[in-house]
Length: 138
Image 1 (cartoon, rainbow, N blue to C red):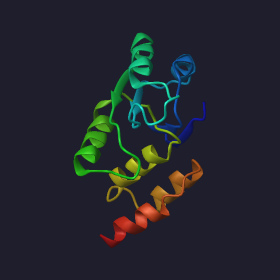
Image 2 (image 1 turned 90 degrees about the horizontal axis):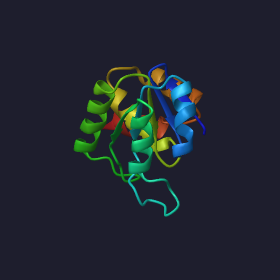
Image 3 (image 1 turned 90 degrees about the vertical axis):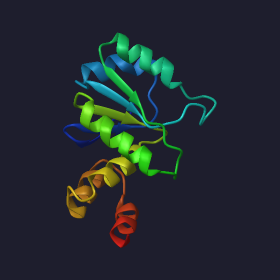
Image 4 (image 1 turned 30 degrees about the vertical axis):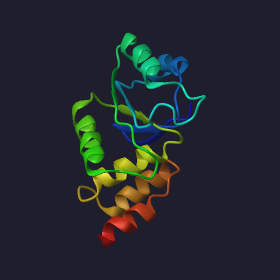
């Protein structure tokens, strides 16, 4: 498991497995947010399995599946709602963590400075300068 903390309340990770749930609980996370559609890779653990294990362990869960490279306004609104409603800290996962970080970046745009967003995401190992550049031009 490769946890990459963006803020005290939001961490991203590549795909998690049912076997990761005890460590996620032990690390203090209270919620899991899945941003990966089931079936994206035939070997990935499906959300239903992760969800059941997480709920059994006392975590809250939500799925906001985003097709890689395609973020629709409704998807972004659902992501924002999940962040506002889920108990923190939240662990979000997708294939590599990049999609979760991109969604967080878009959701934070306007509330945080671009410099703050870039610093936080770079510290976690993700470069969101392209996303921020596109948003600044729109």
